[in-house]
Picture 1 (tube, one colour):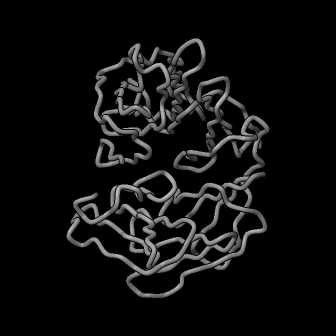
Picture 2 (spheres, rainbow, N blue to C red):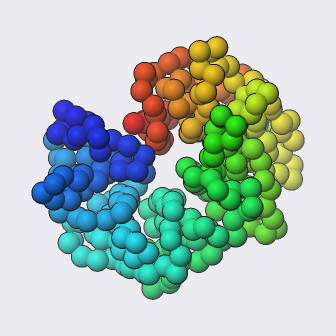
Length: 301
């Protein structure tokens, strides 16, 4: 990124967003001006800048559409058509947001989670109220399954010298929430032997005071499919990484894998069906603060 003229001071969780393997979006601020730099990951020579002032900017995962947040004012623009697509004014501050599809943005406030479609004229629609276990946390991730009937919201907080992960797992069909200690989570599917349909699984990783685990559980069991036995396996951290913890997870559906990336730059690759750890290595000496899917692997900053 510095080779593209991006200052290292602008490469951080608060200024850089990565919603898909298409674009990186960076808010740049100098004494003279504020602008947004958009890096085309397919062709970095197409990197361009626009004079945009905003608290946050996120690029659509598929198209040349950008969402901008200034205070409680949210706006979506089509950069190719140079036209506003949609806007709304929230009644609460939005502390975290991300595209969950090419048409929908998730919005997280102090009290609730909303989904906002950029199609039509509808306002953001509340999905669920935040659980008390997320009070006082910094929200770092939000994910849904493909059907958008399961959702996970994760926040982190400093407790007694370590970073604690708090997750709210919500099921829309039952309107039920479950608080779980976890730092990262991902929805995916696997094909079990003899199954007529794929098995939906939810995996999550945590590092507690007593150890670190990856859990893989079945959601929405399909009648006629073989049952999936829950997996719970250790995540290895070297002795020198006493303060390390999982920061993101991405599924690789083709080979039914899940990638766990830690703050200190370690990657752990697991087989979803068996929970077997296939590979562990350090991929970066710097903090990895955001990842997303890339082909059947991952891309991160």
